Length: 123
Image (cartoon, rainbow, N blue to C red; front, side, top):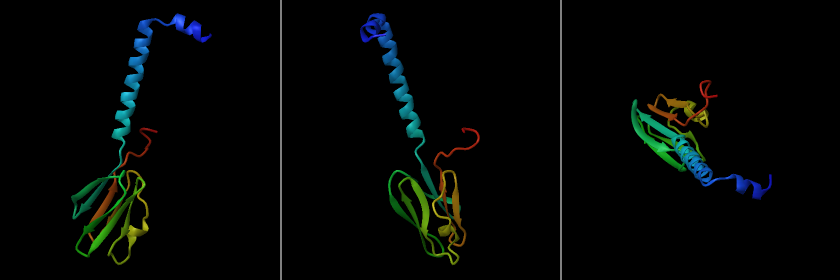
């Protein structure tokens, strides 16, 4: 059909329904995008020390019994960049996947990537 035929077939109510439907879809999309914002939960001695967003690049320093651990947030990812633990196991883990976590036991620091990841329920 040509554009003139489409215009003749549409009624004012059709345009109103189309506009409301698009506005509803845009609102739902914005709400969903905001709810998937990634969060980082940093714990010290089992208690929440700090929560941060994955949107802002930064380095967070957490002082534990052995010294200072540095948690790096960059480009929507998170990792333990430095830790005073002797074996450096949590530093070697690298970037933490969504829904994953790292525990630096000697310094009693844990970092959890609470971003929405995919699992079998929402695949």
